[in-house]
Image 1 (tube, one colour):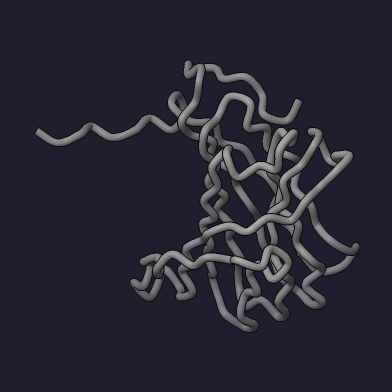
Image 2 (cartoon, rainbow, N blue to C red):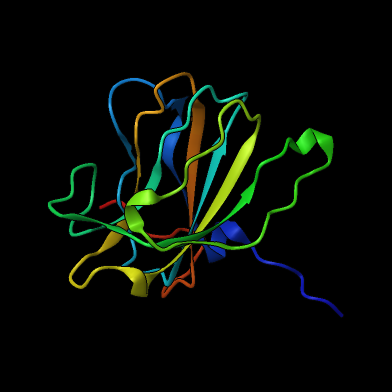
Length: 168
């Protein structure tokens, strides 16, 4: 008999890190800090919609505080998987794991590609010593780029039907 699966609503914590909006204009776009206090792992799913016109650089930061403006942030290396083709075309598979070894280089999405998806995988032990959580930093795309980011915390210390917030 196979596994019955995972109940994401009870065994994980999901949150909208960056609401759906145009990542063009207004300077860099930052997510709120996702607190790793009660979570061992964070998956960040980035979805870029119809034909991005420009490519902002997507990086991950280790943060010393929570909320929208942590005191100290440090760009860190990370790993991700990419799906660069349109799901409707039946090409919904993630590519091989890619390691960003120079933290500031991050991910640069290709221009004029429809329905891109990235999955960033982070473990709590990747936090800089004394830091409490992760956030995304997206450099202004420079042209229309409708996108969003969702965080999924897993490996929780305390799991229940109602989990504690990760932003306070």
